Amino acid sequence: MRNIKRLLLALLVLVLAGLTLFFVLENQQTVFLVLFGWSSPALPLSVVVLLALIAGLLVGPLLGVCMSVGKKARARRVAN
Image (cartoon, rainbow, N blue to C red):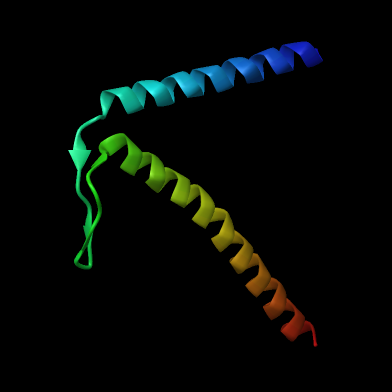
């Protein structure tokens, strides 16, 4: 049973890697991003999208931690 789970996990990782590679190869057009007057260098669209995905994956859990810490602090103040 353990070997089947490992095999399925390996297949899932391979499929995700293949889809990511396909996405990167299909989106090679260069784009410029402008934010508050700052202009980024020309990057392929796939790089911009993957960077946005990674930023979201990092910011989401951080916001969750901040919210849980705030709730615990409020609960302590109410309890005292």
